[in-house]
Length: 381
Image 1 (tube, rainbow, N blue to C red):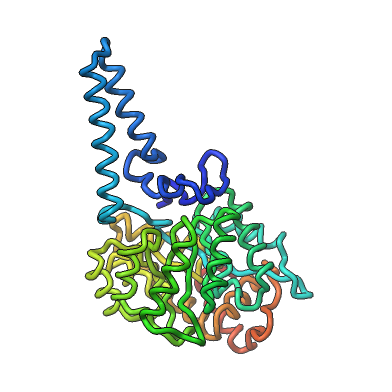
Image 2 (cartoon, rainbow, N blue to C red):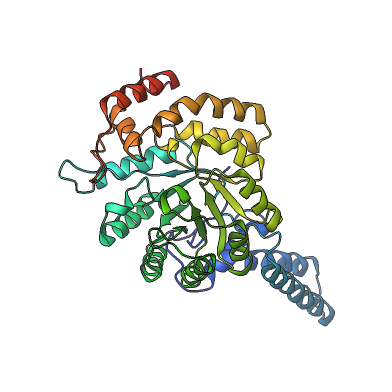
């Protein structure tokens, strides 16, 4: 299911809203009919009341004014409480998109544009640019932002674009997040600080400082296997409660007890996305909103369908598709991501080039195993 609005971007112009009030208003567009903002809804109600009255008396004006004030107060209360407000950036399968390179190691923007179009055609629900799979760690800050800008322009508002802007330097993460908002990203993905680590208090201050510097929504990224630090459920819950535009987490710890605790602490008022392709259905069963997926790079429709079937009540169909994909998913992670998924795309004739060092091409034996699973799944003849 596609979101009816895209946070932080004008539906009419496709341009970023900047630091004005539009992004906050856009966050609540689903409260009324699809595509209606707060102002739209108030206008519709008042126009209906006005047209229904042939003679505009002072009593009519008073009633409409009271109605207007009441609606505004209700929205202020909902903003304050945050309970029941739907702030999700997307629901379903978001692809953690690879970054294609030329033989000389430079970014291949023509190929990147092709990949974006193939993802949209494959019913991907969102694109995550410059994450781990996009090899953000080996791009310069200029390349990093150029890729995000290019993807935003290519997508042009058709689906949400979420920019990976996390860093173990708070100042750098703030700068990247501001720039991503400026070039049209609909949200940011913020990995926990790696290498230097942080206490839970440090994590709270780090994420809050970044989120306070932008108006678009932020998703935290908990991946202890890469960062060496876990974002505790209580920390995530506090941030989502106290910081208006921290709306959820990409959870890649594999710890479902922690996810259940998080859902309990937040009464389910949080957007949780699986960070592991082999755990999509279990995450959805706990109230998750979808997955940020590596698998979607080569099987966008199937990954989307795992989520869509579940949301539509076909739990058995979703479960069967998840289980059918498990051998392929295992092959996609037999070496460190994104080495295998890049090899898979090249096997499919996408010609996205080799990864940048220190990542290397996939070992021959692993590539043969990957190829076999791709044939079984129907991705190769």
